[in-house]
Structure formats: structure tokens, C-alpha cells
Length: 330
Image 1 (cartoon, rainbow, N blue to C red):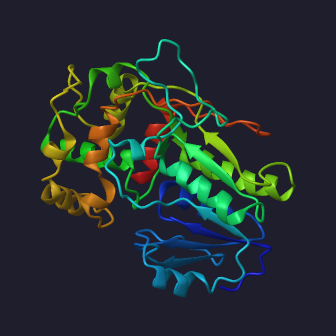
Image 2: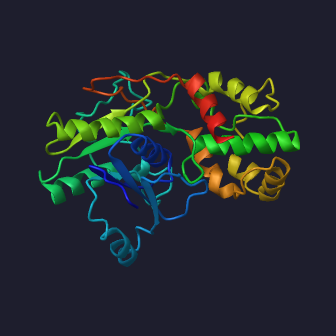
């Protein structure tokens, strides 16, 4: 890859929601070239003379050293990937900054809030590792999003992709587009949303701020939250209209589980791909039914404050953002 660039980024997890946005935004700027790293190949490749994709299993030490150690010109590293090692409903996978559902007083947990005792959250493990290994040698930041919203063909926790597949199957089989989850999650604002594009821009901003000496000489954490709350109750009819499906009057079905209802619909998805002339994609690459079943039955409110200490603040309204993300996938 010939490119006389001042800045050279390695984006680990480039096929994910944030990784893909990072790569596209960086190569659109002058004096940047990008190495994108992911285990599985891109379904729709990014085409640019400033971009090079590297297929690499980061859980394989030999392969990682062989392929990554040769990138001597790298100036920036963006780590936006993780390995799935714990079930979604265990404490290890919960965000640290949440609002307990049984709290008498609601607190929005900001970046400086003390860590909860006994937490095994993987965010903290990564932060501690950076402190230990880098020790002030390199400026770095940590970015904590809420529920990521964007378009990707290779993301394990891509709830929008999951809903698109669900809606397509409902339309194909003339099934009602029901909400399978708890009444509490339906009625109340239970989780923050984060536009993948905003999270990517925040990380790019942080690289400039670090270089200018403004922040993160020894690491700094930033929340990356849209800023506006939403409920599935207000989103669901909008989703139904966007997907062109039949939304029943009684939209909530607590006994409906996506894993059970949709898990055996691979054949139907293949029929849809052929009928609609879609890019050939396996259902499991786009839809994570376990994630939807967990997301719509959260046991606690997961809220956080917006971005802190930044020269700009970008807010996204979920009622407009989610339909637009569906449009970017379809």
C-alpha cells in the first residue's frame, strides 16, 4: 500500500460497528492511511488506496505476531474488538456505569465514578492492562459507549441487523412484528444508545487532543452516549413502518423468545436473500437472537451521562437514528 501519510492507524475489529466507521472516516481525511484487522473477511470491502485489510485471528499469538509485527509505520492503534468469553447475562459482561433498578435516588454514573466492589468487568481489565504496560509512555484513551447503533455485516452484538432479519422473516411469512421482552423494558428507558459514527468521531478527536497535550497523558476515560433517552414502546411502531411489516395492536409478548421463534429460520432467510437479490449472507452473521432476548429483558437500567470535556457535543435522537441505520443496511 503506497501512501505518503503522516498518520498510520491500525484498527483492530475493523468489520464491527465502530471499527468500520473509524476506517471510513480516517481514510476520508488527508494524511491518513489505515490497516484494518479482523478475523473474518469483509463482506463488502472498503475500497481505497489508503486502506489495507488484514485477516488475522488475534487469539492466535503466532499468527498475530507474524502479521502485525511487520506494520512498522503504524502511529495510532484503535482497539474496537473483543472476544466473547462470558454469557450476556453474567456480571462480567455488564457495563460498569449503570443505574440500579431498585435505587431510591437515580445517579448518572460518569467517568470518575468509583468502581463497584467485586466487579469483574472486562472494561476495567483492559484499562488496568494499559496502565501497567504503557505507564505514561504513550497517550491513550478509553471510550465507553452504550447500545451501539449502526450498520455492519460482521458484528456479534448488532441489534439493528438482528431486527432487520427479524422484520424480513416476519414479512416473508406474514408474521406479526411483536416485541419479545419484559413490560418494564418496553415501557421505560432502560438503556443508552450510541451512534457508531459519533463514537468513531470521538476517538478520532481524542487522537488529536492527545497529540496536542490537552488530555490523556496517562490515560483517560470518556463516555460516548447519544444524549437522548428512548423507549422501545416509541421505537417499535416506527421500526414496523420502516420495515414494512404488520405490527399488531398488542405489540408486547413476554413469552416470545427470539432464539426459539427465529433460530430455525435459516432456510427462510436463504429464500429471502435469493428473492430480494441481497448480498449472500448467512443469517447468523447478521442476527444474534440471544442478544435480542437479553437486551429486551434487562434486569437493571443502564444509563450514563453524555460526552464530557469536549469541544463539541453531538446528540442523536434514537427515533430518527435507528430507522436511518436500517436504511444503511438495507
